[in-house]
Amino acid sequence: MPQNLIEAIVDANRTRKDFVADEVLQMVWDRVYEGKPKPVVGVYRLTMKSNSDNFRASSIRGVMERVKAKGVPVVVYEPTLDAPEFFGSEVTHDLEAFKAGCDVIVANRWSDELADVADKVYTRDLFKRD
Image 1 (cartoon, rainbow, N blue to C red):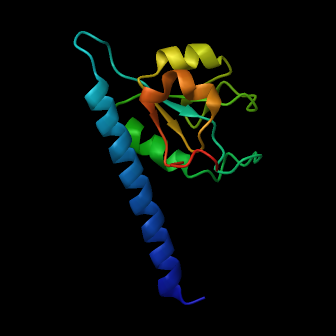
Image 2: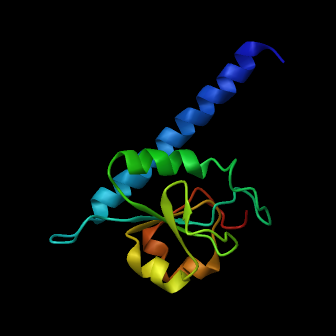
């Protein structure tokens, strides 16, 4: 494969992570309420694809890093991960506490589990079927 194609893919992936992080942060700033302590971003599931367990290669890591670099804490809901944290972010298995404690929730794939907090969910899964 020609080198410039690989470089283009890497650049496109970086641009996409920047774009998603910027949109999430804009949602955070739009949702900050007067007198509320520091906002929290939640990541609903770490996998990029349905029925996958590949957390380490997930591009959500890059989005998390960008959000945290702006001083916004990130909490991860991942019931299949048996660890207290993921790359420096708290991991929880309590979905209700996760939804209540997050101002914005990033979901790679839509889930009906998020229907009651749909107003604070950021997803690119526009058709809610992927």
